[in-house]
Length: 175
Image (spheres, rainbow, N blue to C red):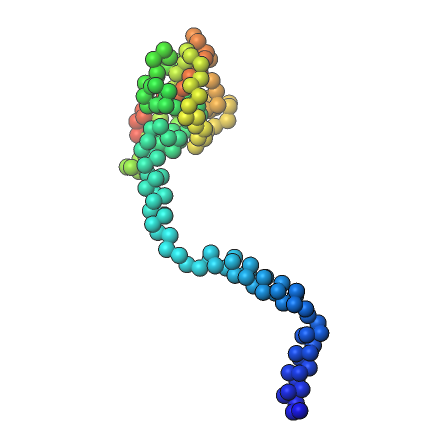
């Protein structure tokens, strides 16, 4: 035998002596599992899904029964639009509280910031529908005019909270 054959003979015998069928199967399994993690990294065209998500997000920004509606950026409570009222009208049998909290929300349709007033509707038990807790710009409890975790019906004759309405007060000019 020449030196080349002896080299491969020795290498083959060494591999056969130090390994088994199980270790060969384990190696193949590792290769398959490893490739399963690499496969999702390959480029796929996901532009249709991205466009679909963007359209759904835009629709939610304009749906006043969704917590993602642009005016609800600082709301904490039940939406009156789901409880028999409107976006800025309390449901029958309730009255708006005398005090409110405020927030500044950006309208994605025109890119402007608006000053939003949030009023709790008081007088009957909690609605329990469309609960939202958005805290954009929320301030700690010692800044009550900007704090949304207070039962604002406490200033009303009947302190039972039902739902919350919103009103765009005006454009926030940042001055």
